[in-house]
Length: 166
Image (cartoon, rainbow, N blue to C red; front, side):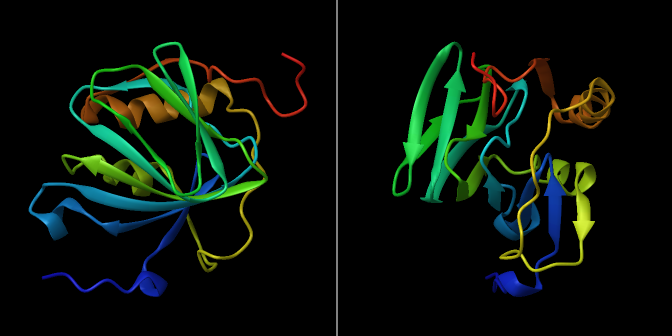
């Protein structure tokens, strides 16, 4: 049995999104991990592929735009999107802000949030980071951390940056 005290859970800035690991593989016998995230409009991930993990995004507030192998889907509060392993995907925040859970199966990948994030001395319900474009150096650092986890960055985000007309 695992007792969860979210207020005591470390908060990280991971690719301009606040996140905290609520359940790790150690808590679930390796079955899954659960990460809670909050972010502002325009925060996004590059295109990437997980060799073994599926991700399910459960939107609590706001909206995400999920992209999987060329198809884009809007995921609003009260809905979810499941992205199977081995499929190229990305997502971005599509509303002023969003609050969501990321369910990762099987567990193990949650270490990436901690290892690539910056530990913050603020509560999870504090201000969200202002998103900006990912530099090539930051993408290369992410790929270094992703490689041992069987995940590969396959390209830049498939979304326009905020303010772009494209």
